Image (cartoon, rainbow, N blue to C red; front, side, top):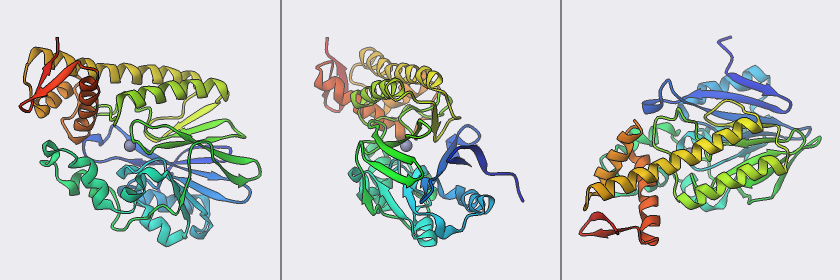
Amino acid sequence: MATSVISYRSGPFATVSMGLPGDHEGKTATRVFFVRGADKLALIDSGLYGGLPALKQAFDEFGIERNELDLLLLTHEHMDHVGNNGWLKAETDCTIVGHPARADRVADNMLNARTIVHAFPEGESFDLKTEYLDWMGPTEGPIDTFVRDGEVIDLGGGVELEVVEVLGHSMAEIGFFERSTRTLIIADPLLPPFNPVLYLYEDPNVMRATFDKIERFLDERDVQAVLFAHDEVKTAAETKALVDDCRRRVDKVEDSILTHVKANPGIGFADLRDKCCDDQNMVREWRALVSIDASLKDFQKRGLVEKRNDGWYHVA
Ligand SMILES: [Zn+2]
């Protein structure tokens, strides 16, 4: 058999690693997580389409039949987390479980791609196919059952997954806290520092509130381990250090925006995006537009900047 695709195994968990293409190549992988209880087998996220061979191999390595998968639990609607939904649904007939807020996007790959890559006219230069659609399989797997913060998914034998809302990166993102092992599984609310693109957030304040929530959760629940989609497993202490680093990176994006709006009165949205990406040595791509737009809207609301004739001005 080829090299193992299982990158971590502990208690009820087994992690399957899949490399990411494009700007992420060689820098980040995405991970999906099998969680086995006495009664049910769950998979958290389906990964990206390019990782389908790894997912197939994982079933073989575990010696599990495909029809043994009961649940596919989705953290959020982004392409590298839902890419094999359609394949899994067809092969395993699992029940797909997720947050209701972005169910329409999960059910429609084209809508999912358009609403984020082409959310702004400045993003229209990005090719939907290579930037988003190629990361997902040819068929979708829509959400069958909705869950919200605090709900518990019982897999049997004491293995219980509590839904934890962690909004900000996506406004429909959830994580899962496995109670018997006190393990928190989260995808993208805490992005690793080696991520090659600007920190992606849809609302800077909601993002910061989630950083605080995760920090409190680690203490209140005495979390023993945190599993991440794009990073290695961490202790609670290591995760707290990462939370601080994430706060600093979001602050840095916002500092960049204000600095460049001050220095370049009337600066356009795309120019501002390029300058902010350059400051942090990040790739100038569509994700950055989402974060810059979110912060500009917040600054505007707070009276720090204003938009005149399509340009941005600092308000003294
Ligand atoms: Zn994401």
